[in-house]
Image (cartoon, rainbow, N blue to C red; front, side, top):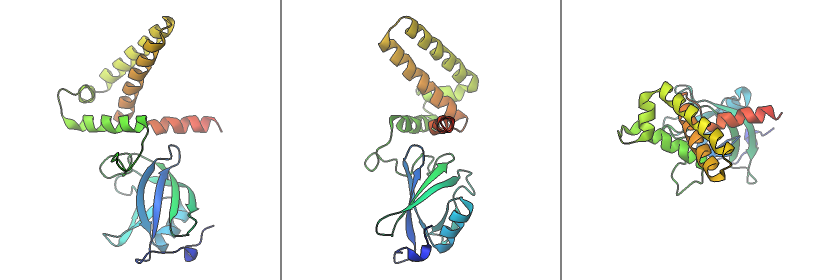
Amino acid sequence: MISFDTLKLNSDGLVPCIVVDHLSKTVLMLAYMNEQAFTLTLATNRMTYFSRSRACLWEKGATSGFTQKRISTALDCDRDTLLFEVEQTGPACHTGSPSCFYDALFTSTTIIENLELTIAERRQSGDPKSYTHYLFDKGLDKILKKIGEEATEIVIAAKNSSKEDLLNESADFLYHLLVLLQLKGLAFKDVLRVLEERQK
């Protein structure tokens, strides 16, 4: 058990916390804790931080609903930084991005995460020329129809023994699946979580 008394705090009496998705290992955000936030987090497993700008505690997701459940806690070798692996519900960033580190200059994300971010941006764009925006505008029935069509094309490609067609149709199917998941407020990592649980 990590004791707050043994941590090396910064000049404000706080300890920085790196927050990582426990499945994808994506860095979600950087926050700070004082002793009270640290104690509450360990006691409740609900990530609680200290806001330097507002000078108060804040439980992640208390207002947005995008909560973080603590999975594990680690301390670096200098005892001045905490690492939390969490189960993230919804986006971690207030901008709607899955991670606060969405600038490609500062982070390396998976193709799936990049695609999910692009889908979210196109959904909000209002661009009538955007196919993604068109799908969201048409709604659930249109998206489900496309998923059905792409699934059928996967079967045809497999029966025709065309590896290139199979790969292309699989990519099309995955794209439409990500659109559906986002419409339902889910992410691909939620699918990975189910697969992980099935392996236990």
